[in-house]
Length: 251
Ligand code: 6PG
Image 1 (cartoon, rainbow, N blue to C red):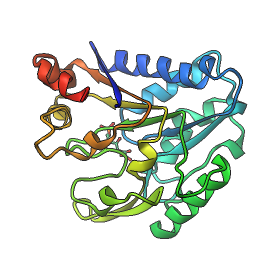
Image 2: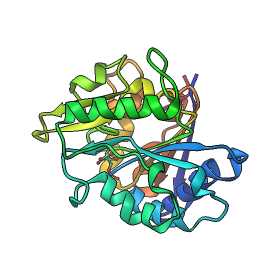
Image 3: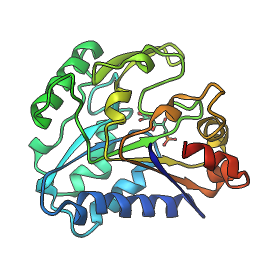
Image 4: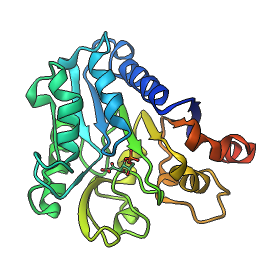
């Protein structure tokens, strides 16, 4: 059973501050000096969390290995690149060694990029299929349609149970994305979802709604470790008035 915690903050800034503190703990003091592996998210909500994380004390960045949960089909210097966002808001502000950063190559064919990334994961985690890599922490967002990483409603990647990384055709965006798959997300020790804004309420109601209804992609992230949902008050208003939502996450 997945251990789910929902935290609602007064503002998006408070959410980002708490997220940075919790991620800093996962990457620093809780690790007892061993190497730690984290997968970052794209989107706008993590940006400020990254900036705060870069300033957090107690993280030995030479021990941190940074991966990505998904990537768009763009070069690394493109404004839409998740890698570029992470580089500008976090990586360039830390002393992280270059070899500790593993990006998905959005500039090549996404099928090739996904295969290449899986091989990179196999090499750096030292595990092979049918096992799955176990991230210490994975940061995820929530789209207004309930997508997370690049697992969009109705797309093929939702059905992937074997491969760790796939190219996912997203007809609603008219593009392909590269994304980690459910078995990898669900093998993580910690998943942190960040969601802010009134436009996330419907997606949240879907995620925490009755299990017998069709749920959006983010609802199927149920890792063997724990999940923390960090919401601002605008998003959290979807849940707080109705305890049924919270109960259904525990089952
Ligand atoms: C991306 C994502 C995506 C994102 C959500 C939420 O590459 O865009 O990884 O899943 O997390 O769309 O994005 P916001 O934080 O901007 O709401």
